[in-house]
Length: 301
Image (tube, rainbow, N blue to C red; front, side, top):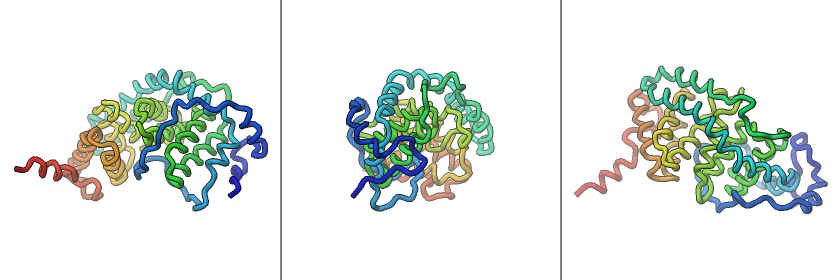
């Protein structure tokens, strides 16, 4: 089937010029090329309507400049760790307040703290030029590659280029963290740094950070041995939503996919929901968690 054309107005790069331009450019370094993990249904970029004959990843990859990938690899290797360290100091304050908010009505304190964690313009990643339209096109195409084609590696490749096109977009950075967590082996430390950066980026659409990015940060923290940060990040997600079903679904999916390192943070979140008297709001929030029955059976004589 012929390659799908890029959506009108989304990219400034002409489709007809793609083959020649692509042939002249060197391939991007394989720093993030890793085997895809089995797909799981968990938190992440919102799934949009995807046609059955979707072929956009190949088409978009052909018309968007390859140097976006080169820029992204350089930013991730040379600049993201430093900026993430600055962001972490602000995020840790939010985590501390969330850990103390044992009453559900204290969620406002968590939101107030989260609303002050944004980075200043002089603290962002360096980017001489920003290609906003290309970044959004690549972000949308990566989403379709992940949810439509179930191709985590292709989604990561596209999202990496989206990040290179606009490293100041919080959604683009957060989605890159999400796709890194879906690879094998998991790039947990890089994902954690990008989640921190995404949470602290100015974003009028999500002034307190996206629930998805707090969840990615929780997962990456648990996978890198920061169990308390993972627990408190899950507590933050409770303050960001009036319901608890989504948070319980995401946490249980993480336990199912990543194993024991997510169990204790998830148990802490479920216990807090129970203390608030809200376990009955979703079957996914029930207490005790389902794996306790298995553990008791193993201990039985």
